[in-house]
Image (cartoon, rainbow, N blue to C red; front, side, top):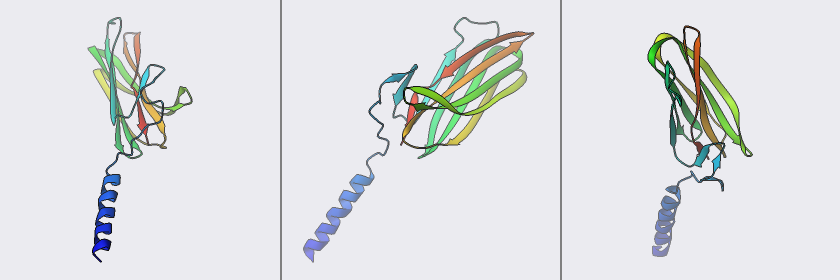
Length: 160
């Protein structure tokens, strides 16, 4: 009886240890770069993209991809201008790594705000596990017929 209790206690300790091991183990490509995105096992990745040649209106585009739960993510993107514009737009593209290239699997937007300097969009998605995902965004400012656009891409996150 004493041996049985000891064995059950040991089994319980082993189960607790195994249960605490992270299930976020990524595949063998972890740490490599595919089309400008580092493949990570982080739970959140973000990017802030400044307009390279400061335009007359567009300042930056930003994006954040956050893992909410085992198979759920939140994609957030925004566009900022340093002046009020006729239109400010943001479009979210959720991309999945297929082989060695990113493929858009969902699009949200464009979300357009009028007579302002800022717009944002947030969207939740349910995903298939066993792949890397990233967020791509397009950010646009329009003022008096002048159109300025930049693109942003986050690093890739592993969804187990």
